[in-house]
Length: 213
Image 1 (cartoon, rainbow, N blue to C red):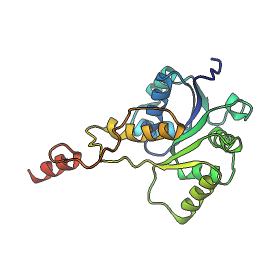
Image 2 (image 1 turned 90 degrees about the horizontal axis):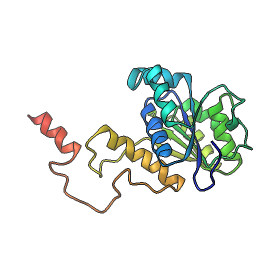
Image 3 (image 1 turned 180 degrees about the horizontal axis):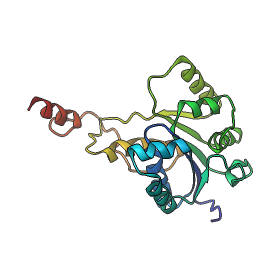
Image 4 (image 1 turned 90 degrees about the vertical axis):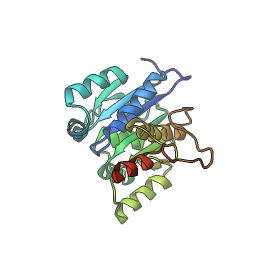
């Protein structure tokens, strides 16, 4: 499809960290809003997905429905491998610490790191959503490098003030934050409106009610 300036063109890189569902949900939301979404899926992401989300056949079937194009992580002939193929943002979600290190040190061994570095070179939004924990000093230095280069490092740490009731609520909080950084209006999560009573309505309350029973 052609690039419509009124909408956006985004690259979503899904790597082999736990939390593949974050990348799938972001792709779904962007596509349903009419944006052009290029997904780059690492081989490790397929393995992780098979363990915690969808097997490879189901995964590729879903992406075929919600993504504009799906690229192999080693396909450097893909349009998004070139900085001349303008995009409005690149999001690596979830981002492994290995991929984080590659981006921070300008190592373009995959299409994901290549696309991410293209966005940094052109001063376009780059968001890396890191889920792994704990973080070593080296990881923190790599995060600092990306931040100093203009990228945004976002830990996949959902909040609980919105009183999430389902896994989707937790996922949508992070996806909504990504959209916020991209400047895309959304109502995926409840905005902070001050302190409110959580008794009987929060996951925390439900958890301790269950434990005490």
